[in-house]
Image 1 (cartoon, one colour):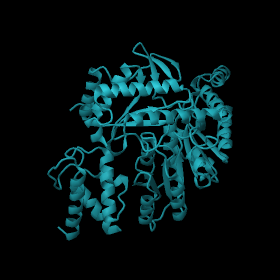
Image 2 (cartoon, rainbow over the protein chains, first blue to last red):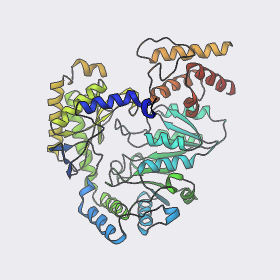
Image 3 (cartoon, rainbow over the protein chains, first blue to last red):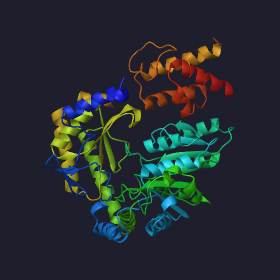
Image 4 (spheres, chains in turn blue, green):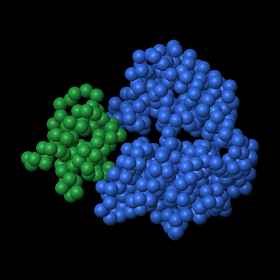
Length: 406
Length: 83
């Protein structure tokens, strides 16, 4: 038995996708042309699966900030902040994030994934309890495995189920920490945050909200779902990422909690990794500035999201429960998702395929994400291509395959 | 075999039968992942049903230790007694 034989079934699936010449898990953009277009296999392709919500990756001020910081401070920090020191940029970005959220503390992590790993594993220790929404992102599950707390799942978006599980744990000692997301990345649905906040208060638990997909997308000033729902005071920790609306890479946490700076020396994913390079830090700070200075980006993003959602809905696709910049069409099977994805790419439209166990309820998803940088004409073209391919594959409304998936 | 173990076994087997797309033979030695073809999330979803039916909490690290249905029955029985 060879070391990698345990992966034989998934390796075979992967090989079949490679043989078919259309593997959604192995795509190369030969040249990226803009936030909405790239060359893939020599073809100019419309990008509808990048999470580049505000389209800031080519913003001149953001690009210039990255270039200037790289020239001034070099390409990398070559070490961790604990062992090798912080740069001024790290501190400035943390202060900018804290100020944006109106919180006392800001912590920057090297990726969004590590922000969840670092915060979740550090907040809940031995004898404490983590309560995770069942549809949580892999980084939340992995963060819960990195720490020593007992981990309990509750039914997705169900405050009643959360309350029931907290009731069962009521007599157990230890702190209770609840983790939910602003927008869930697979179906684009939002959490019932006001109700969750009420349950949190009732049981004296702590609440962490991951706003990775909702920063810059929801709330009057773009702070996310907690802002939109008016429950920021109930949210003890907000976690997020720089790699979506802010167009870079990295993660963060903001909080008002007394003594939160201690997390810097107890959170292993914060301590034992290289800090973000000056160019990334400066670009992120500039992008945060643009997010605040250009509220029209959020308005354009949500108009585009609604346009795509309504367009695909009118074609008869089964979609996530509410319009959001993540628009996922539910496919009858993984094979249908692969076929649909490959045909769209062939026609010049790039989307994503998401499969179980990364998706809820065993769903096979053809996932799109919208950008403020898309023109309405680009959204309309995407809808037209969905119609064309859906027709050709017999996957439009009324087709037996799609009906079976509902 | 105690009545409680039998009761727990019956609850687990009937919940599983309702969750599986096709009928499969179930016994204490059935491997949950290999024999039933469930992925990690499907196993957690199935355990969630058991938690509600028996009003217990099965922490995720306990689920990770479970290989067979017999293991699950034993784990649930311990948790039920501790509750």
